[in-house]
Length: 132
Length: 296
Image 1: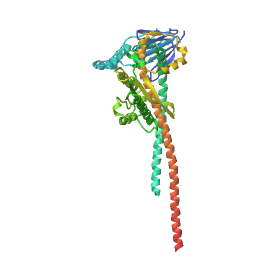
Image 2: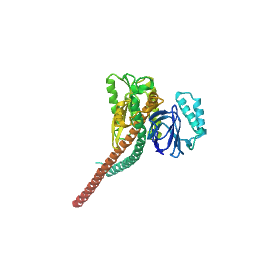
Image 3: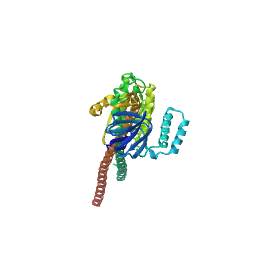
């Protein structure tokens, strides 16, 4: 089966760069499953999970991104994300604490952070497939 | 004529200065490498973002809301100038060239009847403009340490700028910074940040016409553009900060290298002087002894 080249880029560095089988990207209006030969799409992202599956459909890596953009063409998928963390490094209790703290503040900025933190919590609590 | 002891102390003090400058040179060299790596690592993101933007820029017809970052306010009366300097000195002409250039720019803009405000980044330019144009400073950012805090520091500046922009406080924003050309040379550069200068990215667009195929946009072009523009401002600032950081280390390395060499030369000439004085002293003593012996 064919592979698609996937780049995950944050402002500070290139985080992931390899040929993979499938990538699931959190598009603004819903998740996008990107397979080799995908049509050309440019999408903005909502805070959520980027799941990377290998050619034989096993989960390779999972990331949480706080938003950004994806540029997809048949051979390549590029995700530009402002902040990227690996999903398994997130800690549930610290996120819950963060949500609590942010919830008490009332400014536009903290609102934004709050929605990101909530998405983070969702990202680690909602189940996902290890194999597709 | 200085005594032998005076010269000796002088040699010692120049010697210790030399030690300091050569140590600073080493430190700057290793920091330079690190900053260069950072700047290198940030490149993929910014170049991708620019590509996206250039392919979207044409679709921005209306000049409302966030799109104003691209199209401008339609005025060019109020300017904001952001000089990016270092927090520390001892790096040759690095900071003073920024300050001089900014000063010139401000004066020429004011000469054309524009209103100019300043938002210095870095202690050296803040201190300078605090002395000469205190009332024009609206905000300053110091102790950024971009190499350790990373993208955060750029975000702060960009948020503040955008806040002021949408309050209608200024129409154009110009960055003045040292562009990193090589380890030993920096070039003072002016870059228009807001509204976005698409002429640069247009050139790039020409370069890679191949990637200019038709895209589907999700949700739609305008929404993406609205997300993209503020990010672009931050990333441009981030790029400039990194570049200026690398430039600072390069300038410091060059300056310290010069200082070390000068100190070496100074020690050489002082040692020569020391030896001559010693020689003259001995000769004088000998003459005194001989003439004393002759007179007996």
